[in-house]
Amino acid sequence: MLEYNDKIREISARLLKECRVEMVIGFRKGSMPMMNEPCFITKADDAGQLVWDSNCGINLANYLTNRKEKIGIIAKGCDSRNIVTHIIENKISRDQLFIIGVPCQGMIDKRKINAMFDGGVQKVTEDGETIQVDAGGQTTALAKADLLQQNCAVCIHRNPVIFDEMVAEPVDEQQNVDRYEDVRRIEAMNPEEKWNYFDDLLAPCIRCYACRNACPLCYCPTCFVDESKPQWVGKGQDPSDVRTFHFLRAFHCAGRCTDCGACERACPVGINMRVFTKKLEKECFDQFGWEAGLSLDERPPLDTYRPDDPDDFIR
Image (cartoon, rainbow, N blue to C red):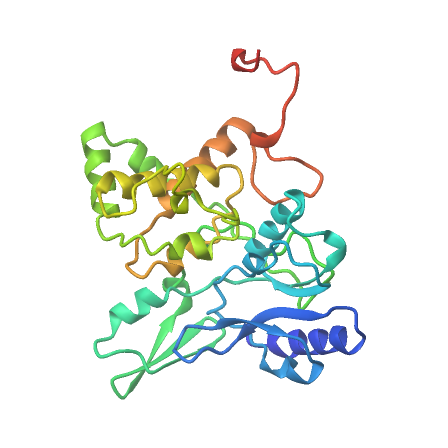
């Protein structure tokens, strides 16, 4: 993916020089290994800061909500699907955007790599399908396929679904992927096993709301957890309040989540809260054949209404 860098910089500089956009939203190198950070480029001369590698996991659609400028944005498959959702939900106009599409080959899991090396990782580089990790005075070569984030390992929409210019030819989409094996494993548990599983899953939560803040779908002016009149959920660490936050946030994402993994990636204690959103993603797919963010021409099933709906609840 490193070969994308020159093309991303060339397109971004050209767009800014020709005043076709007022800014380009992309990534630059972070100060820590495996921590590229979002950046906002407003001058063509600064386009050289832009980078692309296997550490660009943050969903940049999160920075589009209610913006008024003409914007260029770097978008991999899941970013582009969330951009579609933003356009459908009237949070940004298609005319405001110049989408620079990036065929994605998956992002690496920084927690998985950090856990493999005592004493910390000093540097991570990549060459094709090989990841080189500098740690403890030694360099170790690892297969990228073994280091992918969980959501990337089961992704079947790596290419942008909407774009104005691509930085490279589309990549082959993954085939015969079992996207919901983890959901079915939980569905097969009895009630006591499910209770214990979710208790253990959420026990480390410190309610920092990093998952909410990283999610491109969580753009309410005031989140329900921050409301005080009425107070929908307690502010402390009571397990019932922790569960309420995670369950309600997941339901707010029903039919909208693209499984970009931003929530899990941002969590400082490593909670896999994707099990909630994936369960609802699976239900939307099973019941409506719906996958979020694939088309600008179709409304999500949970925000459409038909007078001839066959179910009784509508009458």
